Length: 194
Image 1 (cartoon, rainbow, N blue to C red):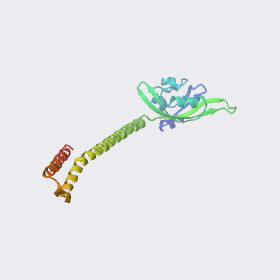
Image 2: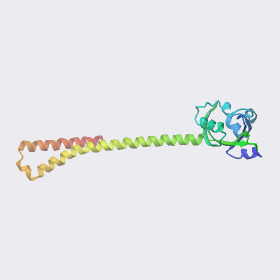
Image 3: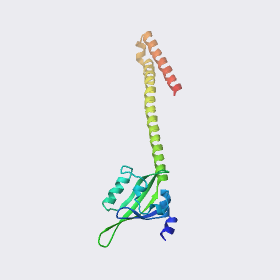
Image 4: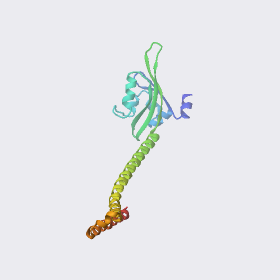
């Protein structure tokens, strides 16, 4: 019945004794490890996958096991021979009527594809944020660069068109017109560069 259930479900079933040795492993779990169910029985999961305590997720899971606490959807990295995979594991401790700890019973499933998709989406999001920041910085610089010559053009044009213009010497007018012309050319070059 358990094999029929696990063969038609995404979750893999497992059970361990008080020492953490696997006493039951569904065919799906064995296939996920690349082993036969018989090769798993009597061995510890961390030994099967050569996991170290510093591998992502293992420390939290081992901490729950040592305290005989439930494992609530721990996501662990499994360094398998065919490459690293990620599993999500959930389990409950089993106790005898006398309170003696018997082991764990739980489920696991491979979340490698979902994790890779999440990592790809995060990388794309970071790239989009960098691109947006670069665009914002470019627009801020361009805004400043365009305003500088435009302010000179507007300011000197207003001065030459005002009543005070009649008091300007011809040299001052020529200088102001040169400034307007130079600023206009600078603005035109900026626009062409953009």
